Image 1: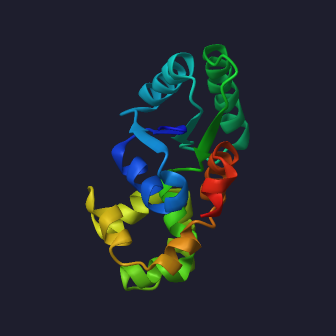
Image 2: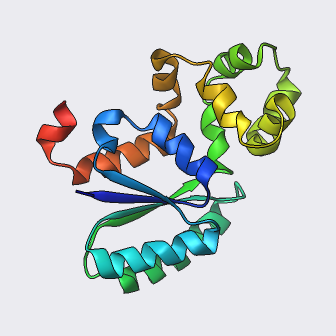
Length: 183
């Protein structure tokens, strides 16, 4: 039984969340890739209107400008509120992109990349994490695999401390019966 839908823009984003969210929470979550930002928003509206199941919509902010993010949040929130007959939902923005969660800990990404990053590289990484990871690991689907194949469960817990992941966990946990969360 699906207790929560988590909707992302693409399959890579979906995979990141599937790997980082605790397994005891994900058993009743259905992850769906919307294939575009608009597609994800549209899918969230449709699910809220027809399935009576809570939705977490996870989007890249594509900026770190707080006023632009809030303006976009308000616009999407208005649309989802119109579609929802009182069903809980939440919009999460990865600032600037979901790949930022991989940069939660500099020493961890340096271990995985097998190299040190200077201060300038690290600043640039925080501004454009997807491009940074493509430069370090190569373009394509292999970035997630290269990262997840080279980290332990303890290191996954470090990545789970990113505010985005913590917020998604809190939202999902608030919707799941407490007996499931304890396990």
